[in-house]
Image 1 (spheres, rainbow, N blue to C red):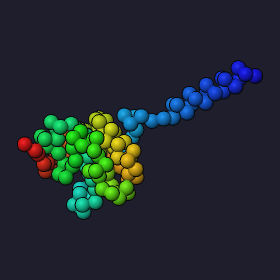
Image 2: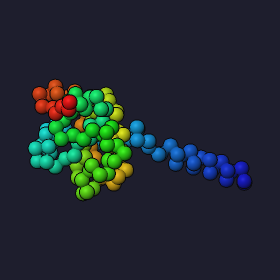
Image 3: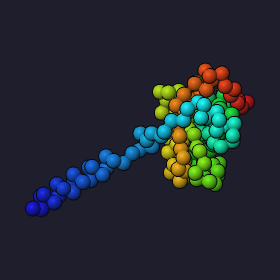
Image 4: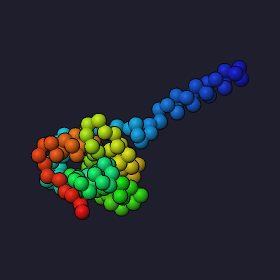
Length: 134
């Protein structure tokens, strides 16, 4: 009987443990290009660029926050309203770096976190303007 209890506890621990999702594995709903441009024009979105400092300086979606530069102080950079649309992006549709930024916003309690899967490459390819830093 004691062996059965131990085995049940081990099985339960395994199942519970495998249900935990690490930030690098978590996914978020996508936002379309049209939805994103509308949200930007209406000033109803906070963007998180997860491409790294050099890429950010070279060109990012206008108004985007450089996640790498503010990660440790992200809470002070995001709006007080936890239902605000937060959109994280990285390089392109194969890039998963956005997950860290999106997960950080979610961990802070934001409930409307999305992913712009086309990333900065898709943004540029669509002919949209970028901001740069010197």
